[in-house]
Image (cartoon, rainbow, N blue to C red; front, side, top):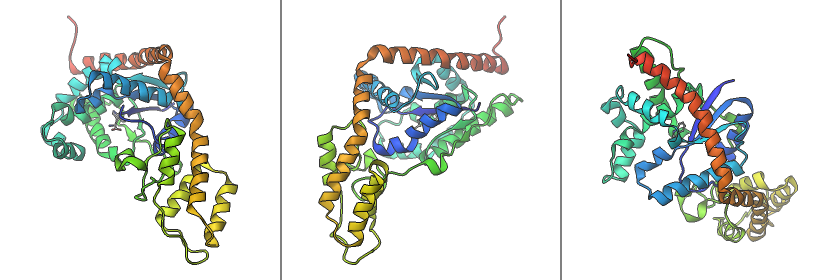
Length: 331
Ligand code: TRP
């Protein structure tokens, strides 16, 4: 079975876009690959969270991924900072990572612009830590979004460089895992396209969001002044609402509103009310499971202990080999 590794940054709550994007695919992936999913808490230090926030963010994502169906019996789910071997590999990789190439990474340059007062070495070496995360398990595949392509390329560079420098083919060169067709794009509520929490307050609907707030957001979703001709093509903002319906509503509901659109009898208020109820029906069980998981610290502790144990087995073997290859030998 193919080994796949993916890191999850512990920032914020999962929204429907995350769910129908990466999360659902992770849940599928755990069935037919040797999957490692970890919470990248070291990476999140680059923005200096408070200790209380750091812990709570890890707890939240852990609860949310478990509630979505990541199964600790099938996938290895762990917290990055529980695996000291990762930091050792990070140090070793950093010795062969060059300032020039690290400075050229687009996400680093973006950070330099966004936070000029906090251009720390962790930001610069973000790609070497990411490479360590993946090659510590000698992974073949990394399921990441488009925004991570450059980091993935760096990872490949570091793995190849290690192999070349030490004249072996110890590390497999990790490939992007492409979700292809199954990557459903969920539109946001502000009409601008993709659902995302950085696009502004009302744009995303979170899995753990309470029904009242979901209703309010959906009722405020951007629409237009309505169709003027029968069977007219839908403008983006309206198509977005229909696209959201596609993932939460029944086929009957969708064709009902489609017909109303086509005959110019649609009332957006009615459609939004229906959409809100269908979204709430969909998210309800998740919200409850997230809450249960979040409060069950005994379970979270068990899951992370088991995950760390499994992950360290594979990580320790890699570190042992790498030390030997690089020339750290016992007297
Ligand atoms: N950088 C990734 C993100 O921002 C998170 C991450 C950290 C990651 N380490 C990784 C993803 C290793 C894949 C593999 O989403």
